[in-house]
Structures are given as structure tokens and as C-alpha cells.
Length: 169
Length: 279
Image (cartoon, rainbow over all chains, first blue to last red; front, side, top):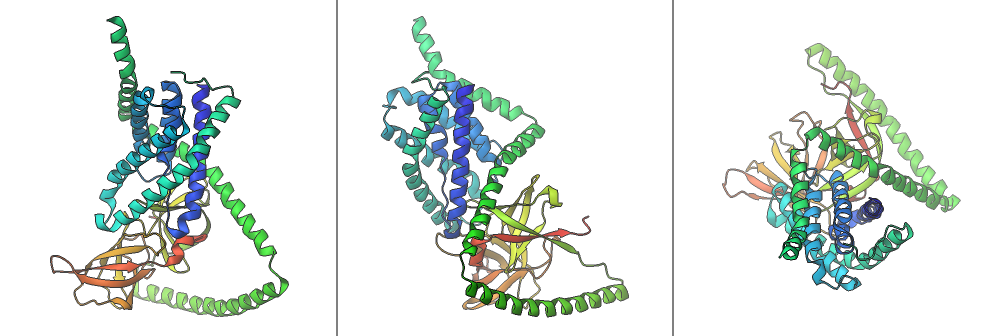
């Protein structure tokens, strides 16, 4: 379970950094969602059980800070993790560009699924959609910038703690 | 043949695990889920508080860089404000005594009294889906769930979650928050709901069930305040300015748009109104 624990700690740090970023950007009403980044590395590079545990725990962490039913993020992250894990052998997953692309696609899917969960609370679709779309664009741009650094960080931390097993599955 | 079956099972294994995990989650008792949620929240709370304290320290050191002339000027302005507030406090005291005498004379039930609990904002979370902030006071200061939160410009929102040392405030710009409100000079209740939160612009809300004889536009806006109905928010707290009204589809009422104070997006300190006589 060392891999899952170490990976969860990196995701915990990511959560803290994203929260601080959103706090700083709140004055201009810009918000960043980085759900794809929570599962991309673990689903692409790690054995299923350890990666899955880390993704679900990260989902629960996101759930605790959001006004959604507890388990919503965790369930979405778990589904995304299983899907990405199942198709990962067909990808050049050692390439950073491929990992970033997977993170972006997963982020897009998670963002729309969360929007479907939250949209019934809004007073009118036409009112909230422009903001949701601008959040999505900002999130994708931010994720593309952060992802290469974060994947390298996760790799390095796993290596330093001796928890990394290359392409084990 | 055996290898083929084994490969197929290997491919399905992630989904079998996923199904099992979801099934276990669905049958898990609510109490365990609530405990897990609180535990995960408390796991992040210390770091949010530390970041907030670091910001305060940064501001403190930033202020130390100001020249003595600037500080003297600020002190003089504060002294003027202090004098005018001292006068207001005296007037408030007299009015309070008068209200209490009238309540006793007419045997009226007393108005809800509140204790002001000032709290620093530790974290703001303003997405298109929700608008919330975390403040640095919680159960340790007796903050109850549902307590109104105010600032110098009016209403901020209400406390939606209370944790050990922090609380979560649902803001009036949150699309899920509804409040009974009144327009200045009218006592008929209308429904306010948080709405649009455009990028680089002030947040906006929507109002419904506005009587047909109420008019407002951006040139002549009307102040929107809490009505006091429902018992959560005391009456008269400013929500925003009604800048547009138009007849609704059914023609029985009007709907409209409310512009919220831009300062809501940069709040660093708020006051929680803690009821003195809860229940």
C-alpha cells in the first residue's frame, strides 16, 4: 500500500495547490478544475489496485470540500480510472504528451459530468452556461501547463520513496 | 483457450473491482459516510488555515513598508471615523433602550438578538456551480449551522457547514441559495436566488414573484434587502441592487436581475450573526 499512500499524498498536495490557486483567482471569478490530473498518472502508470485506491481517496478529498453528495467525485474518479486503465496498453503512455492528452480528455469528461450533477440547482441554464464554459477553458489551459510538472513530480516522489515500479501491472 | 479466458478476465477485472467498490459504497451506513466526510475535510483544514495566516503575515509585513507620513495620515482618518462611530454607538444605545421599553409596554415578543462573531476568510471557492468560502472559526466559537454572515456592505450568505475550527459559508451569489427579500419602500416578499457569476465582472442574482407595480433599471436601481421571513436572516440586510425587471412569462409577476456588491469577491473578514437565544 506504500505506492497508494505516497501517490495519495502527492494528490493531497495538488488539491491544496488548486484550492489556493482558486482562492487567489476568486477576485476575477476564474475557477480551475483539475479532476483529470488526479487520476491520469495513477491510471496510466501504476498497478490497478494501488492507483485505484489513490484515485478514490483523492475523489473523497475533493468531495469533502464541495457541496455535492459525498462520493460523487470518488465515483467519477473511480469510473474514469477503470476506463483509462483498460485502454492504457494501446497508448504510448511513457510519452508526456500522451499523459497530458489523457488528463485533458478525462478532465473534460469529468467537468461535464459534474455540470450535469450541479445544473439542476441553477436558476436557469442560459444564465450559468457562459461561466461554466469559461471555467472549462481556463481549467484546460491551466491543466495543460501544470500536468508535465505534476507527472514529473509524482514520478520523482515515487522514485525517492522507493515505491516506484516501472510499468508494473 | 485457457489463456484467452484469463486475458478476458484480466480485462474485466478493473470493472469488476469498480462495481464492487460502488456496491460497497451504496450500502455503507450514512453515519460512516458523514464521519469520512468530516475527517477528509479536517485533513485539509489545517493547511487552509496556515495559508490564510501566511497571507495575514504577508500583509502585515507589506504594511510595515509604508512611510510614517502615510501612517500618520491613516491614523488621522481613523480618528475621524472613530469619532463618528462613537456618536452612532450612543444613538444606537438610546434607540435600543427605546425598543426595549416599547416591547415591554406592548408585551411584544423580543426581536432576535445576535452576537457578532468576527472571522477571517481562509479560503474562497467561486466556481460556476457553487460559491462558498471557508472562515477561520467553527464549533470552537459556537458557530451554528444556518447562521447569517454579514459584512460592511450587507449580507454575505449563511453558514452551511460547521467543523472543529472552520466553517463553510454559502454565499448569496451561489446559484443554489434562495432568500425571501423585499425591495426598498415595499413590504411584499419576493424570491431572490443567486445566479450568474461572470468572469471579470460582479456577481448577479435573479428575483422572481416581483409585484407588477415595481419598476427598476440600471439608471434608477432599487435596493434589495432581506425580508426577515423564514427566521434565518434578520430584516433589512442589503443583498444588492435591482437593475432590471421585466414581466414574467405568465404575466402575473415580474422577474428581474440583481447586481451584487463587487467587494463580495474579495472579502477577507466577515461577521457571523450568532443567535443569543437559539431555539
